[in-house]
Length: 354
Image 1 (cartoon, helix red, strand yellow):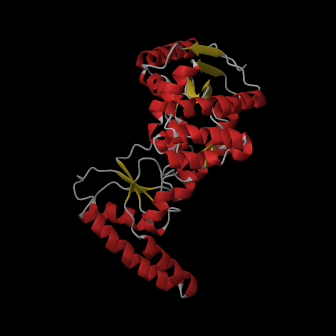
Image 2 (tube, rainbow, N blue to C red):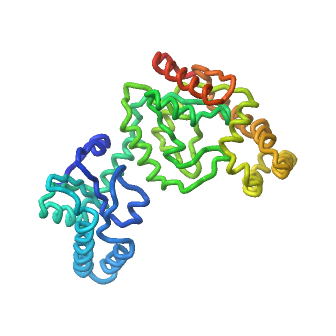
Image 3 (cartoon, helix red, strand yellow):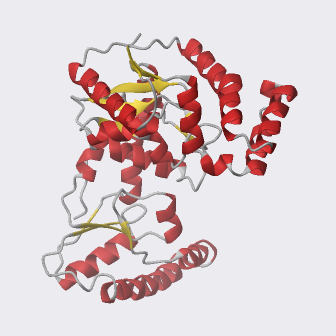
């Protein structure tokens, strides 16, 4: 009998040895249960072919063809990728809605002797649980925002805080995007994939302890923060990192040397700011890029774009720091000191929203 999980933590703490996603590669690539492996019983073309026959010819013909393909592909998986498992192996199998694909594969695994189970409702049940957490109910977690001007090494400080045992939600890692204009958009996960990463991370946290998260806008690259998380962030107290302009500029040159070294690409990205900052300002940045002055263009961007935008955003939200960590520089020792001080602040747990 297929298993039902009442909450997302229940599903993610399933206790099985392996979670198997038997949907097509395209379905898996868009999103999947965290940690699941892909063993499709119909590839992308086969799924489309069966679906076309179902709609245009006959459900019976589609099921007959589908069964042949499913068992053929399942047999290959058993002979290849699953052959090393011993008799006590416990796999949990799911497809789109807990129907024929997962049922057939789970039955075959069970007939071999493995203790296979399927998820009632399949991937759709999982997505309902994710939506319930991120869209429909307030988060039970107590978030604390790590705030500060661009170039204050917030992402690196987050990593160091996590190493000291602080619960850290790394939004940029979940979105596969470094944030800011200089943070190039790589291969970001789908919106559903992004939400799966967020939900999976949140489920690992103890709600009784604070969760540190970088202060971000509601959009990271092309990915949008779901409403429950965004509401919790807007209501969270802030710890502000402060560092001198010179230290911030040198840090950004180190952190974003790849984009700063590609003058043409950087100039193209900055050209989109003409309507916001004016032609004369952008022309000044372009001249610094042409001269190869990485430090100069970085400082100019902070003074003329990043810092004004940051100040405007803080005024709009009425954001006031509940605590500040002031650093003389942004060398390794400074970042380690910042992480230690943040861990101490969170341990005292006296933060309130400003």
